[in-house]
Amino acid sequence: MATKWNKADFMKAFHANSGTKHHNWVNFHAAMSRASKDAGAGDLEEGKLSARCGSINRFLAKAGYAKLTFPSRPASTKNSIPSVGDIAGLLGLAKAGVAVTLGAAQVVKNKVPPKQNQTLELD
Image (cartoon, rainbow, N blue to C red; front, side, top):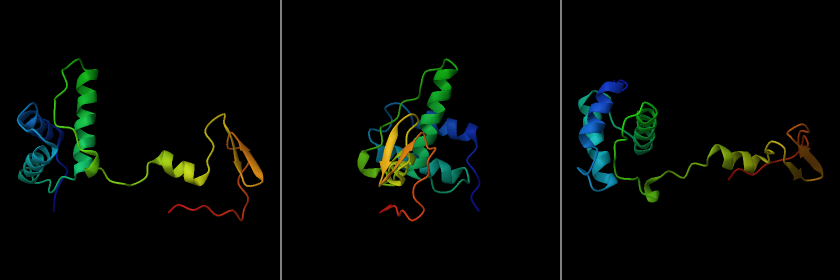
């Protein structure tokens, strides 16, 4: 069973594979995935790698260190799962302080619920 890749080992692999060592996302992901398997953490999903690299860089910048560079993830590899904002829009949720019309009912600041029999299309 794979365990979680600890922070120190992830940062060592990230540092070793950062910079100009890899010229594209595919090679960077493959190298990081190999390091993850070697550490006993199993396969490394692209989305999780991208998020974790971004998170580490935010913490490095906040602590006054230079960010580690790595190839950007191409849009074609990003998943098509809708964001929370996309889903909220599909549900007809109102943004704070914004009035939204849902059929005959009007919602202001999420204080008036939609009609009970209202159906929302998510697909």
